[in-house]
View 1 (spheres, rainbow, N blue to C red):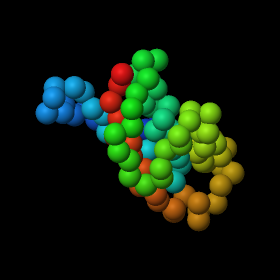
View 2: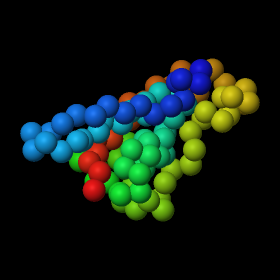
View 3: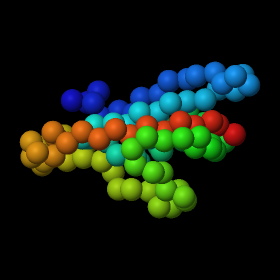
View 4: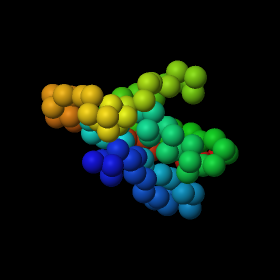
Amino acid sequence: MFLAGCATSTEHRGQDGWANYEIGCSGPLLNLRSCLAKAGDICRGRGYRVLDYEGVQPPAASTALPPPGLIEQAIRGEIGQEALNKFEIRKLYIRCH
């Protein structure tokens, strides 16, 4: 269950040689906040630009972050099976500054 609660990332080199990243935070336990946090970790405070996305549109400002996902509730056993069965695709495609 813990592995299902982590955003993943894959580095891809663009035709221009710059590193682009695909960040996945799909599934019932995560939300877009997980993708945005992973982007921050990858870019280490330099900032990033969202090139594209799948699923939920990212917020225009970092102050408009969604609340944490269901992972904390799942760990405590506070969510039902219906919530765990809901699977949503969420991906961000970013480039660090």
